[in-house]
Length: 182
Image (tube, rainbow, N blue to C red):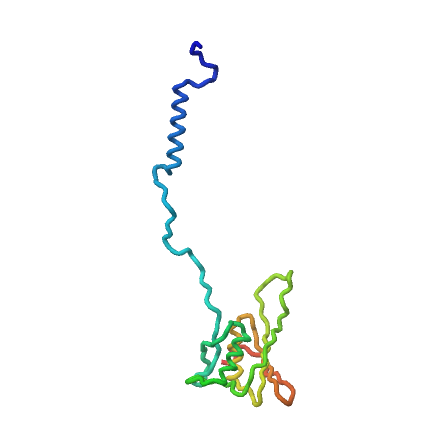
């Protein structure tokens, strides 16, 4: 061999230089441009959103006026809250009182039909019907306790109270809004 190169073949020095540059670039890139890689370090808790607990309060009376009080209920459903409201009339309430003594909670009925599968889900409001049983008249404060407790759920625009009696027909007490009874 006479030391001739093939046409287009790199010169040995140029090839060696190109190889060295490629190795240096690979080392620099792998080393993070001179910054040593570190393990992940947790500096603080990740951001989270805290949803406030559901309302678990009922309206009792204090000095003849409505007073919001915590209730011992299993859930924040209106039915659970109203059950607790009427159950409070059978308990000692200390400096609180209720206008619902002698009345029992019979149940609720929502005027809204269930959401259909294809229906667009929009904010919905409805009338909640509350069924109450007991003799005597339901006072304005008693109605206020029922309506204001129920309307803590913003879905209910109005609360209709139906008074059931033992030996006579039921009577509709009316449709109410909490603000009108205060």
